[in-house]
Length: 208
Image (cartoon, rainbow, N blue to C red; front, top):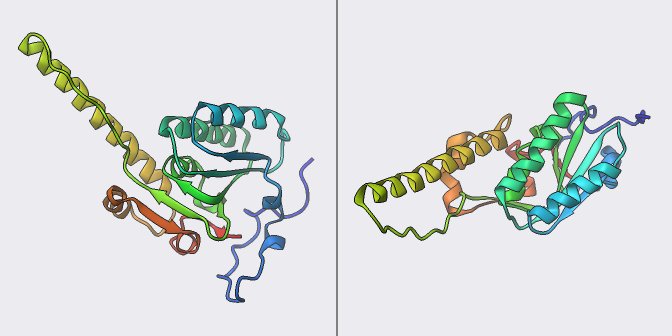
C-alpha cells in the first residue's frame, strides 16, 4: 500500500539551507531507506545487482535508487536507465535518484534517466561529466579499397558514439538551468560539480 506520507515530488522544494547545515531528513523521509543500493563500477555485476534488488523491492509506491560510483560502462548505465524509464512510463510509478559521495562518468549517464525533480544528492557528493573515451589501434592490411572501408567503419563508430553521448547530455540537463552547449563545451575537461552547485543549477532537486 502507498503511504500517506508526502513523497518528495509532492513536497515543494525548500529554499536553500541557510541554517548552517541543518538536516533536511524530515522533509524527504523516503530517501532515508533506499530500496536499491548500487556501489562500485558500472558494469554487468552492477546491472545484475540492480535487477536482483529491483525484483526484491516493493511492487508499488515510490521507489528510491541510490548509487555511488567512479564510473564504468556507459552502455550498462543506459541499460539501467532505460529500465527505469520503462517502469516509470508503463506504471506511472515515482522513482527517485539518490547520488552518494561520487556520481562520476557512467553514474551521471544513469542519473540522466531521471527527471531533474526526481534527483537528490547527499552533502559532499560530486558529479563528474566527461566525454566518452575510446582506445583503439587500427591496422590497415590488404587491398586499398578494403583499407578505406575499415577507416570508414571506425569513423562511423566514433560518429555514432558522439550522437549517443550528446543524447545523454541533453537528457542530463533537460529542465535545468544548464544548456546543452555548456555541458558539451565543459565535458572534454572533466566537469566536476559539487552537490550545492548541482542544486543551484537545477540539475537536482535538493541536497540532503
